[in-house]
Image (tube, rainbow, N blue to C red):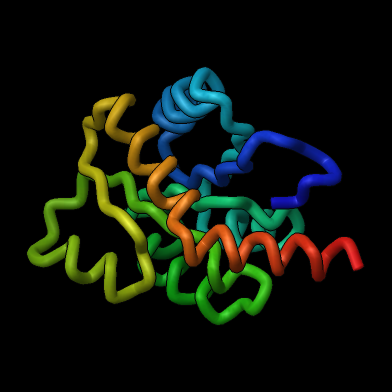
Length: 144
């Protein structure tokens, strides 16, 4: 997290449905997070490179490519490698949970979602001990 600009964790939300983006952003803002929203994987990757989010929350089905492909690409970017990616999707694909974990996703939550469960999973993903250490070292490298 870029602590010089904000104290709230930054969540990048990626979904091609504007209504859902607004709903998720409202839930997360009410829970104390800062949200940036994107409607395509390419926009999300570009935004993530600049803003260095603390977590990325993405749908599986996006207009330009799948959230799984986006996650795999994010894992190849050094500055984003340790950023947790969660999937929030209504995808009815066989073995989608296994595939989302194989692509580098931390959690998979089905739509429609329970706002309390979403916030709880985000907290878990953000504060896992190994991620805290990685975020601290990344933030230190940015400020040096």
